[in-house]
Image 1 (cartoon, rainbow, N blue to C red):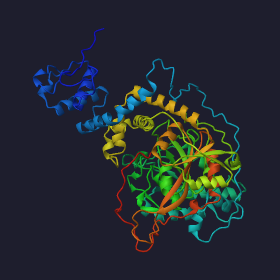
Image 2 (cartoon, helix red, strand yellow; image 1 turned 30 degrees about the vertical axis):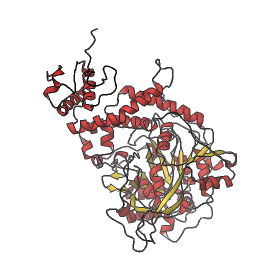
Image 3 (cartoon, one colour; image 1 turned 90 degrees about the horizontal axis):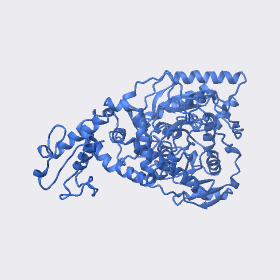
Image 4 (cartoon, rainbow, N blue to C red; image 1 turned 90 degrees about the vertical axis):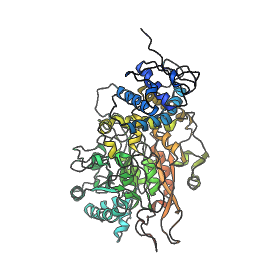
Length: 622
């Protein structure tokens, strides 16, 4: 075997990668070295004396015959052709090179230092497990259905707005006792959706025809003596990444805004079997990234000058505004927690794998989760009970025998609270008999946010490879979101993706060891906690705890508010603990029952368009 010639720089001029010196001062030199090492070329270069440059590229062009920028562009283009990615233009290649230098390389090094210093693979295995079984049958776990509390004594309000803000359990009691029909509820919620959507931009498609058909079926069943449970005849909305036959599933994107998928998503099937009635497909941020979509940008009902954040923008805003009693959203990295917190609703990001994802746009098979947005923790428990279970076509889904959250004795729990916890929640739970203790979740992995980015971006690009190759990323609604992320993902090596998964495995084991309480209360929008929780698969319940005045209100009588929230975190498969604690807190507080002003803003306050407030820099809320 003949050793390839070695790329080098003149060490008398500056330290060099090939001579094991420090990094070149010029990114051009580093890029050239990287490419030429791949090609097996010999390169000599110097800043001091151009006449010393001796060396040739494939085309016999010396480094001195072309300007640095031109040579860099040519060499980078050749590098991308080597990985069958020559479709990027020069501007995009330069953007990728800058991003790889500033973002990818530090993460590569941190992960290698963490898990790859010893050879042989005896330590730090990846959590991504291969299962060779051909048995696709669903083995039922003997888990019992939850025992829902009675909502007896509930009476039908006269005002339709009051009906719209009732909980799922309350609405279910009205239907069960025949004080209202499902068809009447459909009419009320379609009216609410159309009343507020012009302000909030939260709806993609109204499914009125389907809703009235399903409502009639629910009413007919009840008249025949068949009651399917607390979701019987209850209207709801789905995030528009979830497929329903005959209706558009746009993924929030210009590229897919006319797409109709002849698929019944698993979660839609489960809700339909429970008697729930679909009234709308709700906004997903474009390709499930933040709150911008092809029709606009979804606003926060509590302060319409703000946007909802997170790609489950429509489910959060619609539930908050009384446009639906509950909705299904999804999270890969913050898209349940962030919009729920911003819009002041109760929401559950369940244990990874507890809800099947067939028929749902995929970002990351190892991170994506579906969960409910509701008014109350009790409603979240009802929805989880309906949608949990093994999906035979989703290899990550499992039949988890959750304990009944309505039967948990919270006085036997030890619950931690972190330094950033809302102390109001801590004190309320302490008064309810919970043993509350100071707590911090400790782990040594420092690259948590980078691990999440690598995992998500690489897996997302695998699902949208053709979209990028066809140049569809140029049509994306916000250039600084997926287009930049996925171009940079193109140059993440397979080795470094696996190292990130090994580092993720180390994180999971350390979190498991450190999680010495039954649950803990903490900030639900802290980015480190969001990344850690999603990588580990922790469930978290988001609960509204109060409100404060918006900053710089337009008038003293302004009714707009900023919501205050808390997260209740539990170990995987212990969602019932978080739900039980949330129900206990909400049993003696009322922040979850407050109604946002939406378009009733107070004297001399108006809906500013465009917003006066500066939009903060975007952060990954997927």
